[in-house]
Image 1 (tube, rainbow, N blue to C red):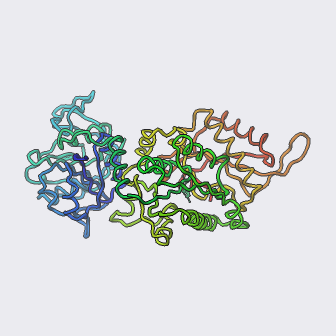
Image 2 (tube, protein in one colour; image 1 turned 180 degrees about the vertical axis):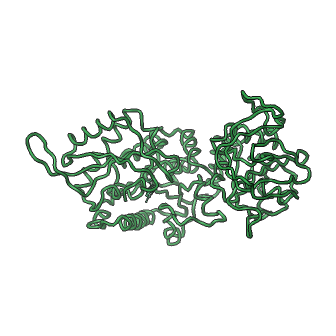
Image 3 (cartoon, rainbow, N blue to C red; image 1 turned 180 degrees about the horizontal axis):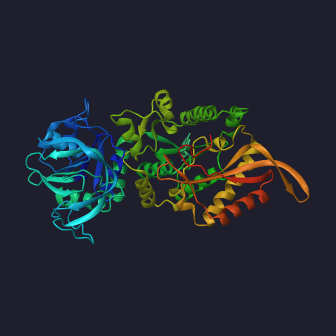
Length: 521
Ligand code: XMP
């Protein structure tokens, strides 16, 4: 079905994922392969065009990443970005050298040829000898000194006489700047021009077509076996469950494990949504006592995480074993995790918690179904929407696997959890009422292990402190504290102190990540 695909070869740029996302935003499917992907794999993928990403290396350094040279003989358009451009110059007979002046950040690009890649990129400023200028984002220390044969310059900046070059006969294009980042004013248009004008792709990547293909593939794979899926209330697991259910109906059993450190009514809400709206089979397992017993007296954050992770596997396994004929485990792995684990840089050291199911797969001899493994997070949201899931689920803030245990600093007890839950409800309620929920990455309460003196009525109190944490972020990797209006903070504080017995002080966390983390533990 997907005939029109763009391949991105990754040379280690921090922006590689963005390139694929930009392509997909135009309803054209794109995948990322490591730069050293075998040529056969590239051929089998049948791309209509290839984009060579940027990267931190210099083409002249020893061991710098070089792709199979045969990609230049495929007869399809190629766009090199930054390192990708230098690579093209280097491999196709040009010359690259250290620039006298490195360019980082904003630069003005003067467009000398706007016939194809830069088509339609107009600007208020018309410059002598140059057609237009526009702002681009640079990040390079090397520059092109001599074009490869067949190439001409199609744009320049003050520091780079060749900021963009093209061999129009072969449909090879190269950019010294990054069109994929938002700081490049006309970046989206440039990528669009490449995939449509130059590669001639059609709009074939739509959620509807994705759903049909995915359902078909799931059905084929599962046959008359059964599938289990662990759901947590998060977007990824819920969307996975609904999609698999659409494909195989009641051959799917969802297991929801209540680990005792969930938010108020969390389990009920998820169960309601999946059962009532989607008529799915859900096994609710109340394992809270089991978890809380294990957590008793544990103060160390890492131990808390380990205990919860291990216990989850045990409970899940016990339940899954009870289902006859189970051969598959459905899991909400997303494309960024897939790229990370197949990247030439190797899997990252920070393996995410939901990957801990490895033991389960082996012991129960389960095979994996990962229907979201080609999707980015924002695409999963579109998919959920297309499947008719409520906005409340689709746009839900992330919630960590170890739940409230890592927000109940130090000892996790039923009493402390009850205080934290009540405060958490108030934080979210006020954030939603103020219309801030969608603008914030996460907002929550943290129960601190200190007590402070207060005065209520004429009585001295000696009670708990709640810290309120709210951050803005794009991917959770970096974050900034959210600049919530004082009135909203005031309402949150007032309500917590008045409504939650045992709290007499509320503080607001104003730390960014890094150097802090989003969660306190
Ligand atoms: P930190 O605290 O590392 O959190 O800045 C980054 C994001 O990850 C979430 N988080 C977790 N998610 N299991 C999860 O599924 C975990 O153990 C875990 N720890 C942190 C956190 O809520 C934030 O969105």
